[in-house]
Every structure is written in C-alpha cells, then in structure tokens.
Image (cartoon, rainbow, N blue to C red; front, side, top):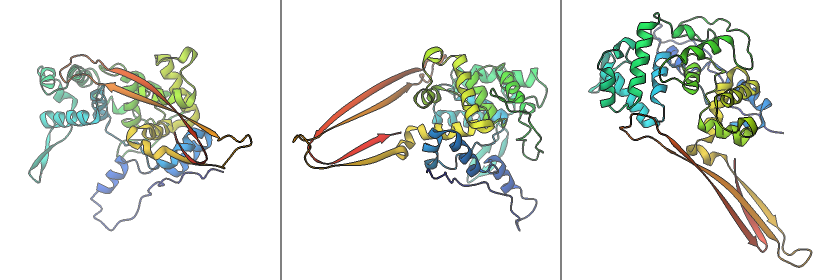
Length: 348
C-alpha cells in the first residue's frame, strides 16, 4: 500500500509578543499562501490520481503565491515566449522607470510596481521597446490604457475569487464548482481575454496566481506534453493543442483534482521540469542466476525512450513572437549477455 505523501501542513496563526502594529508576518503568510493544508490536499489528489500519487511525495510544499492581480497580469504578458531571467529583468525595469520610489537600502534604490496610469503616456511603448520588451511593449501599453481609461477603479480586483480575498479582506462563498469551473472563474477568464496580449493561458495564470481561482489550469506546451504522456491525450480530436483541446485538458484536470486543480497542476509542472528530473529517477536492480535451462547465456534487453524538447526563443529585437518547438525522440536499445547483475534505470 502506498504511503500517503506528507508535505508541510498549513501554518496556523500564532500569538506573538511582537509589536501588534507590525503586520510583516501576516503579510508574508498571506502572500506565501500558507493557510491551505497541503497534507490534506496532497492526500486528496493522490487518492484520485495514481500519477500524482507517484510523483507528489518528491515535490512536497509547492504552493501558489497570492500575487497582486495587476502585477501578475503584466508579469505574465512579459512571460510570453520568454525565460525567467528576462521576465525578472523586465519587471525590474518597469519598477525602476515607472514605479514610485520606496526607499534606499544599502545604497540601492527600490521602486514599487507602477500603477496602470503610469504606463499610458504617449512615449511608453517606444521607451519599453528601447528597454528590450520587443512586441510585448505594445501589449503592456494598450492593456494599461484599457484598465486605466476604459474600466472603473478596482475592476480587476472585482474579478477576484471571494474565497481568496485580498489582504485584510473577509472571505465569502464563491459558488458551486462545475467541470468547467465556478461561474466567477469563467467570468474572470472571459474578461481577461478582452485585454491586449492575453490569451487563454495568460488569463488562467492571472486567475490562478493573481485572482485566487484555484481551479484555473494554465495549459502551455509543457502541460500539453504531460497530458499526452500521462493522461492519454493527443489522439483523435485532441491530437493538437487547439482551443477545444485546451478546454478539454483543463476540464479533465478539474474533474480529477477539484477546485484546487491549479495547485495540483503546479506540482506536476514542477516535477516535469528538467531542473528536478533527477528526483524522479528510479533505479531497479535485477539479479540473474548463472546458466539457463537450455544451456545458453540469458539475454537481457533494455529499451529506454527519452524525449527531448528544445524551445528556440525570439531574438532580443524581434517585434513579433516566433517560437519554434522541436521535439526529438531518442531510442536506445542495449543488449547484455551473460550472467550477473543488471542495473536498469527507469525515468518517470
């Protein structure tokens, strides 16, 4: 019988002797989303999904941050066809050039994230291109104008899951969970799609990490590969990642994992990253006795399939996204004759 995973549980509020006016601890617990009990969630997901049960014990403690919705929106627009280092650099440039000054620490000046209205000036798009944002400069500028000029103050925050309020807010019920998600989630997702540079995946990232909708499941090329490999997608009408396939994959995961499907999806996403691949390597030793009934030496066939994915990102000065994904499959067959001990390595 499989041993249930035991990730760190939730961190309950504690009584402190510190100054009651210092809310640093409360802010950190809120931002790091430490309240949900991961032990309970992991056990629930493991009971309904053998694949999750297989991989989760090596990746305990994966949580979804409670990010500011506006910052999450712009951050994920920057993430389009990009890597973590460049995304971080872009966010820092936005703060440095357009965000309000906070203070100086150890000789370094710090700025807050800019308000939408700060990114609506007539020269903003051109300046962002000079700073290396490429085609994303247009999306950031146009989205900032839409939020600052076409919507009422607080429009984005009003799309938030009431069960996951902003810091200091009071939680309230969010409605009935459905295969396609709760009504509030579907409304938030649809509203976000009206913004420039926001497609289904970016909208789901913002819903999950900026608006607290736990059932949001962002499906990118990486998650699509997981769905094909481990959940039997990729055949028939779902042979490619179309809008219909995107919805089918996300709905399947919501049905499997429930209203916190986005959290479970993030665990498998983390487990599949090349950086952590060694955690999932399983070694199996097989003993082979000398000789064989027919007097011949036994033959042991070993066949290992490795799939490598290479993503070529766009050039720094490109104006349009051009991402090419190359998938190579390498099959290695090794035949070992003779007696002795044979070590087999199986990934996944």
